[in-house]
Length: 60
Image (cartoon, rainbow, N blue to C red; front, top):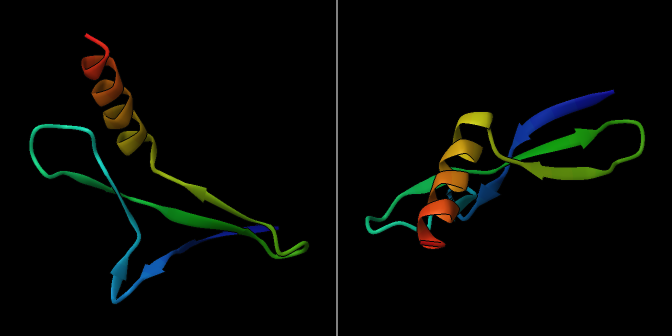
């Protein structure tokens, strides 16, 4: 069984700084397997698309 939980950093959610001209970030969530205790950090599909676009633009 797995459960998604928000991660905490200081007093706000853990974020990744996007590689863009402006200061933009995406939120990182922790997906926890309640049977094994394994934790996997994930970003939403929407944020993943944004990160892919950033990477594509920085390769130009």
